[in-house]
Length: 269
Image (cartoon, rainbow, N blue to C red):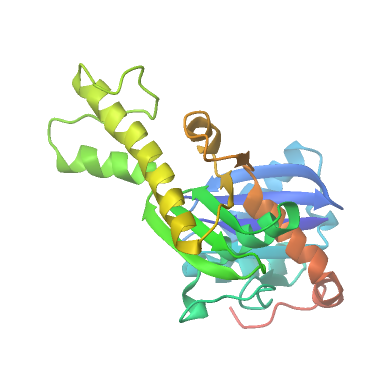
């Protein structure tokens, strides 16, 4: 089995695959000082609830935007799964061209999303990921990563608004029936929700104008379906795009990973 791990700023997702079939997926809050033992206890118990034994894991692949989480996950893989963990961008090269002034700046999740999108859709593409940040990633007609846009995520915006304005409550993300709010909560919901719809539509339009042609737009992340119903520009919904990208990378580098997975992870604790 493949254990794929996606470490985001808010959540860490663990997924198990047998071949290309997903047989389990779990989400934990990302805690930067979580230890290898804490990861192992949580994950092994969750696996057992589905009747899965941790000894069945044959390979571990990690995508992380939180550097502090990488080493404890490597140690967890080595000490509890007896497998070397492979980290995208460190142990495995990116399989697509990165056309940035400094390719080292790019987050692994954005490349992994691009890899998954290229396996499923014909470029040029825009991948919109609703995470801690809302990101727009551009893949050109030749399959190269061209860059993108990073905007504050919607939950981050709601929290900032609540914290900065003493009389504004914390609200849920809901599409209000009217743009013109007739209460404080209604006005906030309109500003957040329809403001994000405007941001999505406006940025996609500007990206296409700058690139010079229309592009397929793929939305991923938990909030993608909510916004796609009100923003038709989000033509394709692919909620597990990052995990699909990790699976594609595993298939691409499988000979290397399988050959080295049963070796010690290396490095002293």
